[in-house]
Image 1: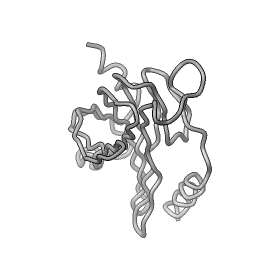
Image 2: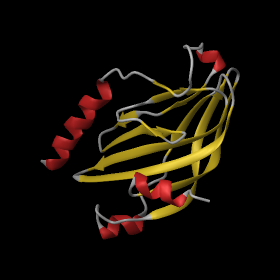
Image 3: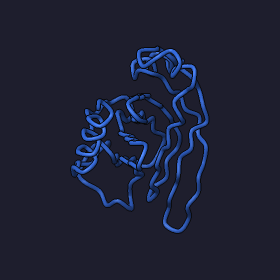
Image 4: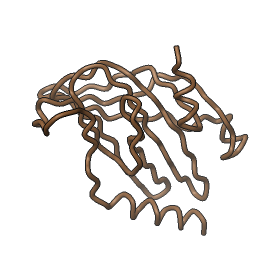
Length: 164
């Protein structure tokens, strides 16, 4: 029953229109001049997955946020991935940073929840570095790339970890 309640909450959250993050100063700019990170809410018969943008360049954004628009250049983005499989909820935060190009859309895919964390339970504290898949679509090119990412059970661990 608990899984059904979580599923209903995610389903409602996935249907709402959400204002994109404007992660740059000044007036609105055309999408073609910007680099865009987008994420998604997805569900199938067994799993509900919700990937939200939690922070851009050190600025946190309360959710749900599914699109961030920024000027081209080097950016650090933190995404929050939540999934519900049956009655088990799993939540993780992944931070990635790289040089984003104008007119391109980037869609991160956080990795599967780590098995050791599953065995320790939802309250376990963990961190790991991975190569995270990011789909990139530019005007006439689309590709999947792998970018270095730090993932953790809590967003605060990422801020502490990236201090070098």
